Image (tube, rainbow, N blue to C red; front, side, top):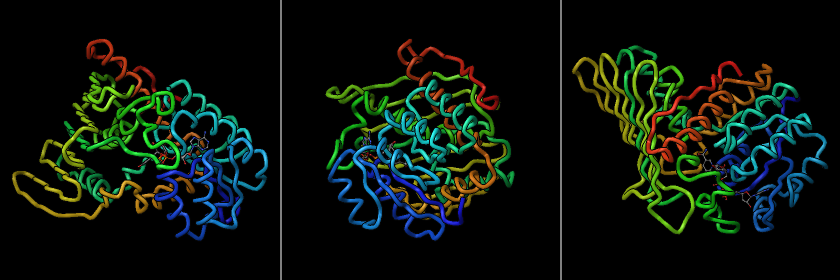
Length: 345
Ligand SMILES: NC(=O)c1ccc[n+]([C@@H]2O[C@H](COP(=O)([O-])OP(=O)(O)OC[C@H]3O[C@@H](n4cnc5c(N)ncnc54)[C@H](O)[C@@H]3O)[C@@H](O)[C@H]2O)c1
């Protein structure tokens, strides 16, 4: 690996066009040399911002022809993540993959095995950890100010499903064969990996209910889900049918509590209240500003040979929760165990 990582992007849509690529352009240690997208208009969009790169209509052709790549950035809908990642690993490339890593646990485990076998990093884009106000929450926990965290609630309100670029298929999140599921599949990972950090453990059980209020689609637009941890509960509510776009998180500890409402925070420590604001750009769904610190982690994992890294294990844990939450909902909200120990993978 040289000082400058050479990368390719598979799927030049919303997140890679508005989020990843602008962040790459700000960095001196990475160069995007090739793009693959099945939509000609999106390849034109890539050509407009990276005229010296090479362009392919399929990721297969890109992997076949590009010989000097260090990594591939997978930003297609989830249905394609595993196939692209497995082929890239077999070609000796590191993989940065958008969430959800894969729609099924079986595919995620195959990626873990391939990362180990080919000695290449697979790294999920768990970017909410990099939001400034979320980093602040982690710092509050680490400082011990709110004591031991016993309960967390994570409400994510959206007025619509997230839309893909117009040139391709803007509603792919509502088509199960492309997305693997609705809001639980699309947004669940973000909420779940935050619960692991805040409750400092992995959950043991899940009970969940999904709803599809907009009947024209085959994926759910609401998820209500409770995770049981050794030290307490995490409650996650996700909706694409809200009246306002917002995240509201709360962390209840033995000595106090932290409540986050987008950029605003309210910290209560032994009855004493403090308030503040940390600009976190929640309204900018491309999250470009969060991407740089995520890419630093990916680079560090490559440098240290951390192929099956913590973030990858957490991605598998998220998918186990999503898969099991769907089953719980289908079985009348039955509480189900989460038996796969991802730390042993
Ligand atoms: N981490 C985040 O905050 C965040 C935010 C948005 C999207 N995402 C994730 O990024 C991924 C893409 O989402 P998006 O909103 O950018 O979607 P999008 O529809 O805007 O972009 C997808 C792109 O992939 C291309 N594509 C589709 N199938 C392909 C294939 N088989 N081969 C090559 N190209 C293909 C499409 O033409 C399109 O340009 C998803 O996994 C999504 O969950 C993550």
